Length: 105
Image 1 (cartoon, rainbow, N blue to C red):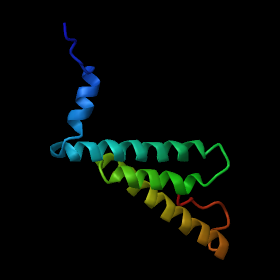
Image 2 (cartoon, rainbow, N blue to C red):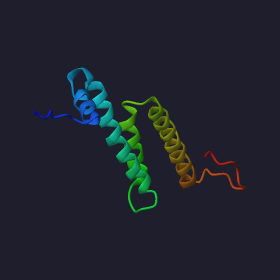
Image 3 (cartoon, rainbow, N blue to C red):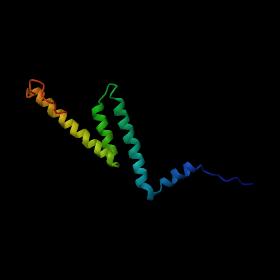
Image 4 (cartoon, rainbow, N blue to C red):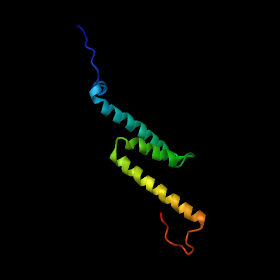
């Protein structure tokens, strides 16, 4: 009796995904894993010492190459950074209203 060498179903799917016809799916999986990892590291850096406000947008930028939701979040993050920069410039230059005017953020 000869015993057949059978692969588990998950391994068959993995090998099928490596075909040239499925290169887009493989690229999407790789981008997803790398982008999610960078994003999670950035989130961890919010409580750990490190440049979280640089790493999080980098993770979103990686994910934005494949996902529309990441593009929207990246656009919002970019707008928040621009607003914060303008508020900081106003405070430094003394243009902030005395008397508790409304904040731009």
